[in-house]
Every structure is written in structure tokens, then in C-alpha cells.
Image (cartoon, rainbow, N blue to C red; front, side, top):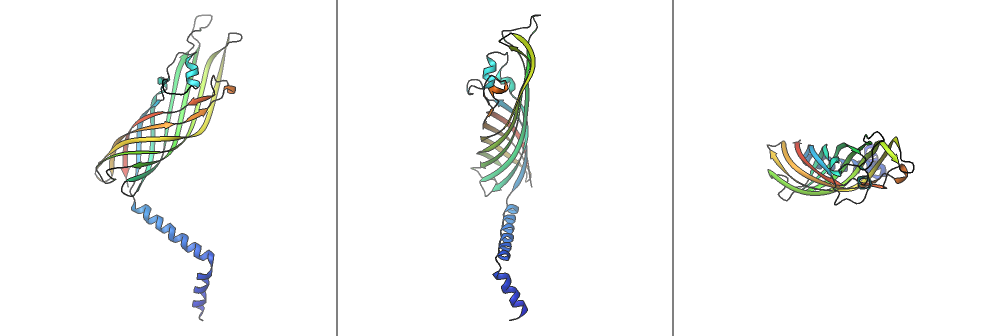
Amino acid sequence: MSTTERVLRTVRATPSVRAMMMSAAICGGFGTVAEAQEQSVSLNLGYFALKGEDTREFDVLLANRELFAFDVSQFNNAQVGAEWHLGLGDYLEAGIGAAFYQQTVLSVYTDFINDDRTEIPQDFKLRVTPVTATGRFFPFGLRSPVQPYAGAGVGFFNWRYSEVGEFIDFDTFDVFRDRFVATGNDVGAVYLAGVRVLSGDRFGVGVEVRYQDVQGVVGIDQGFLEERIDLGGLTTSFTFDVRF
């Protein structure tokens, strides 16, 4: 047996070498698949509407409504985001994205004022930064110039809620200044639908509606009037896609 034959037999008989060769082949295969699929980046500018008073579960915002002069709809505000898409065959697409929303609502006590007849003010502030993984189904296919779609996914929601201002101690009726802050990272479901219109081979524009279903814990023991906060709501966005 020649030296070359002994080396080749050793390579074939060594499990670690075979595993490395198999891993390289698999990675190469995935690379070929990834290169073959269409990819795009989407920039989104939308409007996030927090779940309304008639549909939300009783939470800290509804509890606050019994004392303070504000509407839940005042938390509605713009949201910006971006998402990376990967085509999976002719009708499916996977996406990973992130977005940012923030709003501050000014309020006062509904039935109480200071001794000098001035209002007792508060600032309620909510910030939500979702990171989502979604899948979309395109009934007309990813090659159609007009692409309606529907999909679903899961979101990881980083959020912060605060109440800052003047408050009443109802044991003594003294007015004091304080701040209450709650933060969290919670997982929730995401449902979406929309339509995308292609312009040439590289660009596309569209409209998408996306509903998120998620709740967080603010904590009565942290000074809030209720244990939970409902972060569910609907985002309506204009989208701009770039394919590569």
C-alpha cells in the first residue's frame, strides 16, 4: 500500500474529518439555497393605535382613567421600523424586523385641584420596541407585480411605562411629587396582512396592518393602580422595499 492510499483511508476512517466534510457540504448547500432565494429590506413608517377602552382588559391605563383626565387613544402615535425578508419558495416569505414607538400623555386629576385652585398634573409615558419574526403567505406568488399577503409570527417586546408628576396621598390628602417606572420584556403574538406593489426588479411599495397581542406587569407594589398593562394594538404602515 502506498503512502497516498494510507492517507486516504485514514481520512475516510476518521469520524471528525467526515463530520467536518459533511458540515462543509451542508453549509455550502444552505449557502446555495440562500443565494437562490430573493431577499429584501423593508422600511416602515406607520401609526400605532393602542387597544381601545372597549376591547382592552382592565389594566393600569383603565385604572388611571377613573382618577385622571386623559383618553387611552392619546397614546396613539407614529411608529418606525425596518425588516429583512427572505423568500422561501414561490409563495412564502420569512421576516425579521424591529420597530420603535413612544408617546407621552399629559394629564391632571379629574375631581381634585390644589388649594390655590391650580391643576395637579402628571405625565404618562409609554415606549415599546418590538423585535419580531414573521412568516407571510402570498396567494399570487412572489413574482406577481401585485402581492397581497397574510401572515403571523411572534414578537419580543421591550417596553417602558412611567408616571411622573404630582399625586395625592388619599390617607392625608397631601400632594406630593414622585415618579413610578416599570420596564419589561414580554413575548406576544403578531398577526399581519397587506399588499405590496413592485416597481421594476428592485423596488416595491405597500401598505400593511399588523396586530400585536401582548401584556406586561407594572406592579401594584411599585405604586401603580393596577398590576398589568395591555400593550396590544394595531399598526398601519406604509412600506418601502428594496430587493437584492
